[in-house]
Image 1: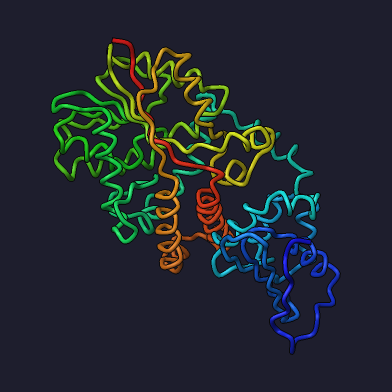
Image 2: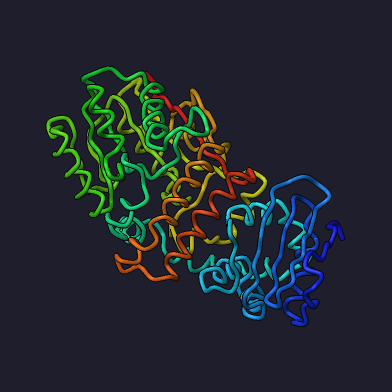
Length: 406
């Protein structure tokens, strides 16, 4: 056993629940960081690993239900336990970072966590990103309602990782820096025509248009299209920006440059060659594409690919994160050269911390829109899960510059 077990509430009786004891024994295997576990009986156990790491806090509320979910659903069951209120944490991102860093130790102590990837994978594969499937999958997330997203995104309405100059920088400023960095990568000139694949609510398109570019933005979300068009009209930029409801596979024409910000994650592995072929086909000779995408660690990819994680099952159906190597190979197979790449995982963790704080602050307003407590817990888990992944190094954020032959 790697952890030091300190009973920090000596006045409280030791827990008598068998489920609590099983969970405590499992969590006692942490090797990195510290984990404080509060039991339903009022006890508090501090589990200290032998290696430095973050501090996490887990409050057990219904240990039997949580244990049952772990047996039946593995790590997905742990997420569902949070959504159901079986456990709680004052900082779920910190807790999930501790668990991620101790994934191997916990898998040995709780082998049932790794036993149930098949059903989730089948469910995931039943939602492929065909043309019809892509519209359905995108609508499942982005058509939740513009009012919902506006409550917790910054004024740019950018739903992707920002690039910070310093930790205390306002999120909207860091988002604008992200936009400008993409334009700088492309070496754009006023008057050029830029295609944005996955234009969201139009934040980047507006930024590019204000720098003299013509922009065609495409999305599969009707909600995004409506708000993006409204924002373009309000800015008086209708002559420079066109927002269309269109699948990237149905595009026509060629463009000086292409930008795609965190859309590639939703493409799905069977369609990776199709995506890169589209970039190549729609770039003018010598044109450039700036792609921002989340990547997954090479060592984790095989297991990730065989299973279906919380994000795929509950948040973004149909998608799959690439590794840096697989991204480059797919691009090169389509005739595109990787000219530059930079990683911004720590910036994305900070972005997610901003979003999570805004969701907590606007809980009453979100509930007033009709979203229930389970949805709020699911959304908080999603934001915390992503932040933990970036902080633990399991995932990263890449800005890649691709170039077509001249």
